[in-house]
Length: 413
Ligand SMILES: [Zn+2]
Image 1 (tube, rainbow, N blue to C red):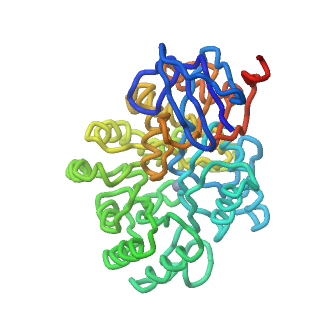
Image 2 (cartoon, protein in one colour):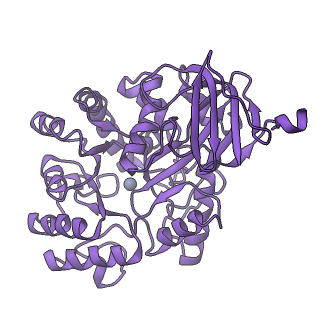
Image 3 (spheres, protein in one colour):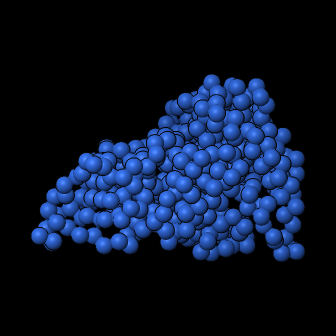
């Protein structure tokens, strides 16, 4: 099947300004992109969609997703850890909610249950349930066993324990392994300086990841933690709020191999939240204020140094539900000095580079993951926060949503 979008403004996912044109999709792939005055002649059975001046852009990519953090714009859970059956239901729904809101690829930042994301990724890929392309993970490993009690493979110290864990993940179909290198002050005051892994464990993680074709995702706040993450060969590092000037310089030299996700969505939402009196968010708010103040200076420096900074902000809490993820683009504009086009590129082409798939750009030969937006996100990224402004959502050449009429030359003629 072929689909032709005509009369659209094309934002191609890169730093290029949007230009009017048309885009032809054949099967799951973008076959041709033509900028005015060039045109594309539809074949007799091509489905033609007149965009009437709307913006056609790549689907968005969230680089820090927790599908098993239950709360979404459709359902709020007041328990953080759900029973296993409910966890699976919530993750399945959250994948669909994110696709409804224009996200077509997700990079997992870890799960609250083993096996859930790998099963879900397989069901999505098979077309059995709607959802974005998913780079799945599993439980965030806790070496001392002070997290969720899940048995030996997720706990235990030493390089052998790490190797066993990585082999288990590969066997389960996990694609990225989340290692929590720093503590988390939002949950336990001043724990961001705590370190959970040894250099020997991180060396073992790096070797095992290479052997099993896995990527590593790290949660790291300080120089010591980021150094360990780099030692493990992390593909993306989250937060980094407390790093020094020397570490900024070191990261600048690694800009082509490591990605950065500040994860600001949860901080902004925590600061905005007005919880009921029986819920104490004071520790979380204090941590969020401290981190945002640091990141407002840090993120622009890392961006200027050429690092690829990606969106994704720990959505899934009741005060920061899944489905609001596009707020991250506005945070990049409001707090980090991004232009709207730079924020859009972070959410599309740069996220695509993280996944390694041909996603995140409108370019011939790339996968047809596309949004048709009623409005101009290249001047106002907040239009992406309203899913009703998404006139069409296409994933791999198939419409998840289409609100405009399709015509075919054959029917017309
Ligand atoms: Zn996270």
